[in-house]
Amino acid sequence: ILEKEKVKEEKKNLILTKYIPLLKSEYNVHELKKEHLLKNKDHLECYIVKEGSVLARDKAGNTSTLEPGAPIGFSEALLSRPYELDYFLKEDTQVYAFKSSEMRKALASASSLTRGMIKYTLDRVFSSNKSKTYHLIDDGFLSKQEDKFPIKDYKDDDTIFMRNQKPKFFFYVESGKVQIVSKEEKIVATFVPGDSFGEMALFTDRVRSVTAKSVGNSTLQLVSAEFIKDFFEKEDPLIKFCLICILERLKAMNNLRNLIK
Image (cartoon, rainbow, N blue to C red; front, side, top):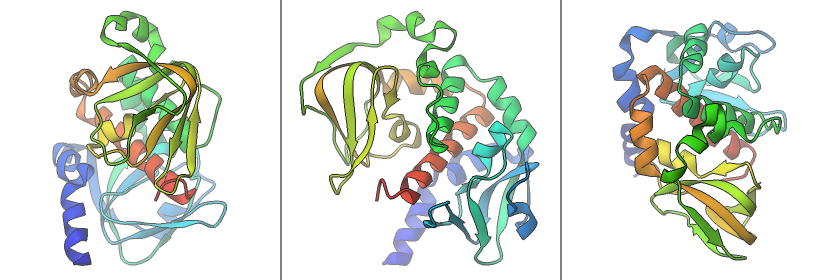
């Protein structure tokens, strides 16, 4: 049964099923070696695991196994920085290798919305709070699209969305506070004015893995899945691939930090 579930999960992997076939001219395939995983250097390539597996370990000693479809090094490549995690080969591993410089070019040519979402997600990957408001307002994007974003008020302890729910919106906090709660009732994150949340499930075609609740009264802008997907579909496939890769990295970091199981 476990093997069947693994095969089913691999079939659903968005990177392997959708983007790798689209990006044949952008990568080469080769064996992953120890020198490709060294820290304290900027790597010329970033990777998607094709076959095999790699162990990732954070500073606290938490570990996670990266299997086919998992990205390695995309977040660091976009910021021209050394690896944040330690990586160890668990077995012979083949990868799809992409040039880091091409990922940075893709980011630079993205729309203001996608560029903002990528930067915002990178801040969350690396636990940085240096910028919170550019996600939807780069180049005046928010004001230009205001008529498409309805406003909704929530009262204390109101549920904004629930675990296992299909995503219909992601959200921008106008006022108040929102907490994200795991299956075990653990507070995963708290969002305040200028923050956005709920986009990961929308872009990765997954159901919600957490519940969102209002803390006190809050006012949110609701950005519909249809609007974002229509907007996102106009982007170059390489740009879309970049965003999906770092959203997958954020999911992996949340797992390493024991925030979401």
